[in-house]
Each structure stands twice: as C-alpha cells, then as structure tokens.
Length: 458
Ligand SMILES: NC(=O)NCCC(=O)O
Ligand SMILES: [Zn+2]
Ligand SMILES: [Zn+2]
Image 1 (cartoon, rainbow, N blue to C red):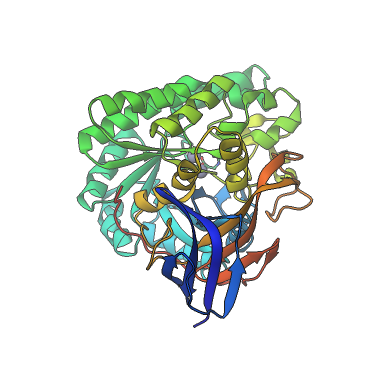
Image 2 (cartoon, rainbow, N blue to C red):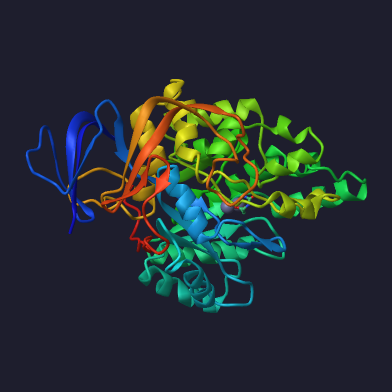
C-alpha cells in the first residue's frame, strides 16, 4: 500500500484549524500532527495552502432519464468533473419507475455506475409509487446501505406522490431509522399555472419562473414539515430556494422539530433576472426556479444561523441542443443546471473570500454536515485518523475564471461563464490516491466506489 504525506498545510475541519501534517497509508489517514517524522512514498508540501475534507455533493442527477431525454453527464463524466472541483463523493438519485419496484430501479442505476464512476458515489432512492410492495422494499434498501428516500411533491404523472403516499412512506422509513428527503413544491398548483400560461400563449422561459412562485414552495415545505412532525421521521428538504420556505422550517424549530435543509449554489448566487432574456433563459430553467435577491440574503443568513446545513448543486445538466426541446414551449425545456464542478470554488470565492461565511462553515456545508446527515461520518466529510483520505488542497489567493471551454462537465455552456474566482483547488486526494493534480485527472474510470451509508448522526 502506498503512503502519502501532506506537509505544512493549514488543515481545516468543521471545528478545527491548525498548521500540521497529514499522513496517509493506503486509503486511510493514519496520523495528523506537527512535523511528522515518518517517511512516505510521496510527499506534497502544502505550505501556505488550505487542506480541507473532500467535498460531498448529496444532490446530483447523473445519466438520469427525465423529460424525454437523459441528463448529459454520466457517472464517469460527472464524477470526474466533481473531482476536478474538489467533490470526492456524490449522492445520485435512483428513480423508481411508477408501477415498478425499487429493486428494478436500483439494479438499473448500479448498471450505470458500477465500474464507471471515477469518484465515490452513493444513491438515494426516489420513491415515486408508494404501495404495499414498495413498503416491503424499504428495509431491503436500508440493508443495501441506501438510507435516504426521496419524495417528489411535484412532477405529477412522472415522479410525484400524493400526501397519502407521503405519510405511508414517512411511517415506514421512520421504522428503519432512515431519512425522507423531499422536492417540496406544490405540483398541482404549478401544473395549473403552467396550463394557464400556455393557454395564453406565454411560452418563453420567463413563464417557467412565473409558474412556480414562492408560495408553491413555501406551502409544500410547510406541509412536508408538518407531516414529518406528525410521523416523527428524520426529514430533509432538498434545493430550498426562498424566504417563504425557510420561514416554514424556522417555524418548525419553535416546536423543537429538526428539519435538515439543503440549498444549492445557484440559489445563493444567481437570481430570476436571468429569465428576462429570450431563450437564453433556458440555461436557468430548473425547478424550483431562481428567486430574488432577498431570497439569496435569506439563504446566506440561513447558513450562518444553522438553519441551512448543506450546499449542494442539484447537478442535472442538459446540452444546449437538449434545452431546444422547449424552444417553443417552456414546459418542455428539460429542467436542470450544471454545477457539480464549481460548487466548492464558487462557494469559497463568493462565501469565504468575500467574508459571508467562515472557513469552518464552508467545510461544514460542503462536506461534514452531508456526511453526518447521510450516514457517512466519520469515514467521509472530515480529516481524522481512521477516515478515508479524501482531501482537497486549495490555494486561497489564486485567481481563475470559469468557462465552458475549460470545464470538464459534459455540457456545452456554463451558467457562470466568465466569473472570476479567488481560490483554486489544486490537488484532490480520494482514498489516498492523488486524483487531480494541477488540473489533470490521475485516476481512471472505475476508481469510484459505492459508499454504503448508515443512519443520520447529526
Ligand atoms: N431540479 C431540476 O430542475 N432538475 C432535476 C430534478 C429535480 O431535482 O427536481
Ligand atoms: Zn427537485
Ligand atoms: Zn434534483
């Protein structure tokens, strides 16, 4: 087993910050301390740079069948792009087909990811048809190390479950000590607004935004939170975007309920003015849509208040050609946004470098909290003896510019084209292997491992 010594870095975790060395033997961190004297097969001098836990992005859609097409990053291209941006583990969504079993869906996704992924990955199971067979399969999935179950309150006829199914799902998941995650928007209301806009000939991307006003998310977030409170299940809201929805969570904390909240990098940095440009706005068609500046402020504050524990991406890229499916009708534009590669550097630059969040908070929301909530801690999400050696080395002063011409995601535009960032990820280590060195991938397709998960320990 090869060994690696990272010397003189500023090693930062969610609750510590010190200049020291990290010794790795094989895949595991075996020593952390000042001036370690052990020799190693490879030594990296990280002097004046930051050494942080490898990122965890718990919300990605790779090679996903959706809206008549497939998201354009495979498990290979998506996890490789993630590694370039310092994300060493992703959690992808398996989608049950309505009328089919969870097992069938899992087998299909395993077929796509096994031997293909470059970085580590796990799966959430999206339950799109909760019935007696599904109920019986929940325990089986937990035994496979899949301990989070996703419900969609929107996308009727494809992914959505109704409240009766949601209650049943929560009750069953609770029995197994697992977690229910939710896409919380009111699908019926959205479908009504979409139909009204289409009937009026309002077909541009702007009407995607106008069909999903803040109330559609706030209402569903409140309903989900209330039902979760009744059932007592561990609950997590994915891609929360707005003040109204976060206020529902804030309200729930008054009755001492805990609901985990994820926002995504785009909701912190981009706003709905991007829809006011003809079809170019299709690049930003995602659900929920981008919101207002006041919502961005609420989300940044929510991170610092501890109400928002995770910043993910909801990475769901579509090529520009795929976006053309909705050229004449916004409701046919494949929903999704590419960000898997730039989540960490964007948040570092806009969050840490600009003083909005601390470095410890950055580590917590990009890695540690997801590891704890999704049952991977302390193997993942921190730098400690016995943990997987998943590390990123960042030069905090180095400037660089985002462009589709240089990114590694399989998508032909960038939502952040031309953004100038401060702080560059230079080296990424995954389970003891240098995976990225100065922009070059050093590990092959198939290096990524499936990570079995346990219960939430937050
Ligand atoms: N978010 C989005 O627009 N696409 C992916 C599916 C989902 O997460 O709702
Ligand atoms: Zn969603
Ligand atoms: Zn998603």
